[in-house]
Picture 1 (cartoon, rainbow over the protein chains, first blue to last red):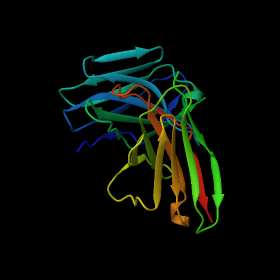
Picture 2: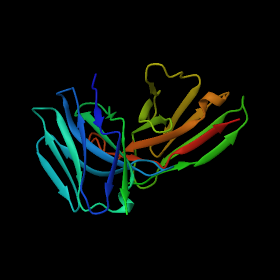
Picture 3: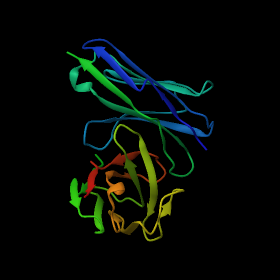
Picture 4: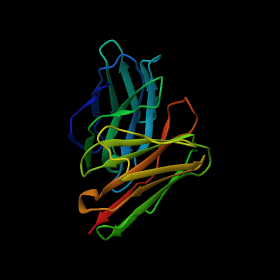
Length: 112
Length: 116
């Protein structure tokens, strides 16, 4: 089955700096890679996603890059703000079926 | 956008009682819903896939008689924790796939279960 690894587990950055979270996956059949933000006591919220037919996707301060050959994808947050502080999860999913495999999460703290 | 409502957000119960958690898709029909369990500072663990009109598919190690799932309509799935014990205390989260086959999940806000 699929194995998704996520690094780092914790990340602290100064407000205004960039944050990068990386994930690797093992199953070449995976072709959908979403990123979720989870605030304390709440459910995960989809913030950006990418499919395997593209290498990069950007939405304002958030971007995701995908290297399908190397089986890794990354979340980039620029100009970080305190409200970006949360736990971020990556996930990988194959096109067939509904299976989502989640990374172990990264606790991001943006220091004002 | 797609909204998934989960209720209750918090529940405290005595050991031995049963607790029902509801997951509703408010503005779309969900043929498939998913139930997760999340321990503090850990990732989401898929418990089961709930299929409308048929039996749920449970992940290995999840007791189906302990965690009863019913998906009676295209907008509602329920998870019942039967004869709850303190070790069942956890954060339970549901999700739904808005467009079948699109592989895009929308999550509920989660339900914090505390068993005394």
